[in-house]
Amino acid sequence: MLSGLAWLALEAKYLEPAKAFYEEELGLTVRERSDDELVFAAGETDLVLRRPAGVPRGGLHTHYAFSIPEAEYDDWWDRLSADYDLEEARFGPARSLYLYDPDGNCVELGQQDVAGSGIDGIFEVVLEVEDLDRAQAFYEALGFETVDEGDDRKRVRLHGPMALELWEPHLGIADARGGVHVDLGFETDEPAAALEAVRDRVRAVDRETDDEIVVRDPDGHFLTFTSP
View 1 (cartoon, rainbow, N blue to C red):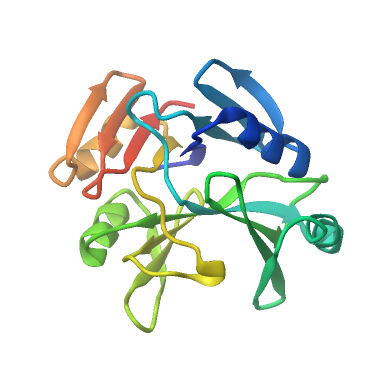
View 2: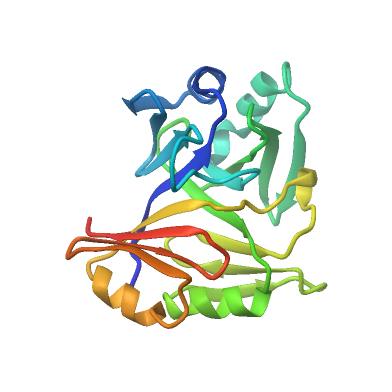
């Protein structure tokens, strides 16, 4: 039903420090800029940094993960560890490093099977939710598949256009937290079908056109279903 992650939007109190971090430290290219918003190209997904000047604002303290080529991991570690207190985690044979951006978002760079060089997309986003069962059912209705449930039942992991983790409030790896009022854009050939799958579960429908539908999930996260 949902074929791709079009964007992840985060709140940035000040754009210039955020721009310096993502452009100079992580090598992302600014694709668009306005007085209140920066849009970076992260593979096929946009990373949007937005000042708190309207609604949707973008996510706070959001943990999310960039894909990097497996062979580049050590180079990323050596370069970033000079200025950041990094943490590392292993998931089978794959390694991930963790650091924080200027606005307190926990940024993961994880080894993935990607071509080219540098950051190539976002492969995971973590949302904070109040009721795990309710949130899990909502995203399963959109076509996500549950692949892992934490032993303490404080989190679940689902696969769809990207990996989606739903966390009840707690601290994860590197003391990361799930994001609140996160703004996600999803590509789909049938925005209306996506809405109908969850119409009875959404908190609100903010906009509804033939090509784009904006809803708020049960925890207030903004989801846009948009035609590619």
